[in-house]
Image 1: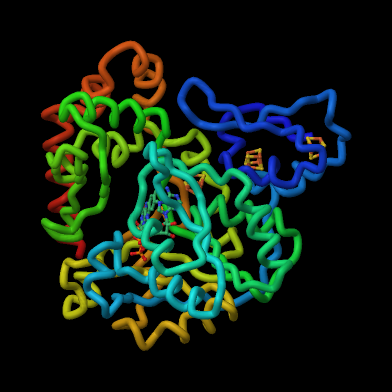
Image 2 (image 1 turned 180 degrees about the vertical axis):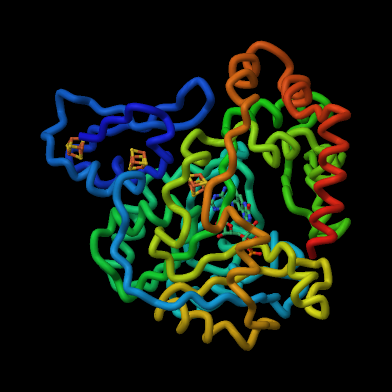
Amino acid sequence: MINILKKQECSGCYACTNICPKECIRMKSDNEGFWYPDIDKDTCINCELCEKVCPVINNPNKAENKINAYACKNKDNKSRNASSSGGVFSLLCDYVISKNGVVFGVAFDENFNVKHMHAETLEECEKFKGSKYIQSKIGSTYKQAKEFLDNKRIVLFSGTQCQIKGLNLYLRKSYDNLISIDIVCHGVPSPKVFRMYKEILVEKYKSDIKEVRFRDKVNGWKEFSCIAEFKNGKMYSKSAKEDIYMKGFLKDLYLRPSCYECKAKNFLSASDISLADYWGVENIHPEFDDDKGTSLVLVNSRKGEVMFRKISSSMDIIKTNLDYAISCNPCIVGPVKYNPKREQFFSEYNKKNIEKTIQKYTKVTPIQKIKGKIFGILRYINK
Ligand SMILES: Cc1cc2nc3c(=O)[nH]c(=O)nc-3n(C[C@H](O)[C@H](O)[C@H](O)COP(=O)(O)OP(=O)(O)OC[C@H]3O[C@@H](n4cnc5c(N)ncnc54)[C@H](O)[C@@H]3O)c2cc1C
Ligand code: SF4
Ligand code: SF4
Ligand code: SF4
């Protein structure tokens, strides 16, 4: 039976709960707002399946294949604008739905909780567009995906690298009708911190929220904005550098503990395609960058290659250099550094106003500001 000795050893992927034949694993939220398995030991039969599917201790099998990297932009500007980077994910949805397939992705529910859900029409796929910077709850979607796969439907399953690694281990065999897409991530923030932040916005604007967009491109893709629309018609809009929730997220202040020691990076998830932002595209392909969003698409398998070819005519594409792309986006291959203020933040966040607590732990001292400027100049000279 799974035995988590320290929190870094669980990425909260739900593979163990989906596989347990006795349904004796329940995911329980800890005081930071992250879920961990809680096992009813009286019901457990010690079958060890939960250990075999855990992506923190196992790697799925994958066929050796050269990874090809591309800079891509969806030709449909409306769709690209509604997406976080180049809008490639929505093209994959278009293809799969046109083949009567099923798409699994991440959406807000009616209370702005972030969950994995499935869609069988293009209208239903709309809710998946855009990054939601909160850990998504997988629930029983691995089981649902398996049912669709066994019924011979094409399934496109997207998720963070650990979620796709968990899915591929949970399935325990390869399916020709599965296309797994991992969304490169540097970490997922606490759902509880987001809930507390959302409550502050609701209080300030005296209205429930209608829509949240973390990566609005109104001021450009690189200077993205965080927007909340309220039911009373009011609107909140701040750049990611000013929005307090985004500040804490980008400083890795309240990520899941496993994200600082991530075991799903470096192409270990066995996904067919990885999607990321192509940060640094302006230096290597300046003619391609229009500051409206460019995706970095990494094609990792034969199946991924076939899929990529199917959607190619709907994109502007340049083949690019994988090493360069990784140098601008190191979280493709390794975890972020632990923020030393994290522990102190979580010891206080429940007691005081969340906005003020994040502010306190993201404050930049004058020395850090000078260091940042020098680092920026050196980076510019290097380029
Ligand atoms: C928490 C998080 C952190 C990220 N960090 C980075 C990063 O550091 N570097 C980088 O290059 N890219 C990062 N990304 C990915 C990137 O921002 C784009 O989402 C990705 O490139 C796909 O863009 P798109 O334009 O093709 O489609 P979009 O429409 O923008 O993407 C939607 C896809 O993202 C999925 N998704 C949305 N929210 C979540 C979530 N909470 N958990 C799992 N899947 C989700 C949807 O299901 C769908 O598959 C991150 C994404 C998330 C969710
Ligand atoms: S050992 Fe088997 S029965 Fe026990 S919790 Fe794990 S999967 Fe469930
Ligand atoms: S990482 Fe996934 S499979 Fe492993 S213990 Fe955590 S939830 Fe279960
Ligand atoms: S950083 Fe790693 S552990 Fe954290 S959500 Fe992303 S893939 Fe999972």
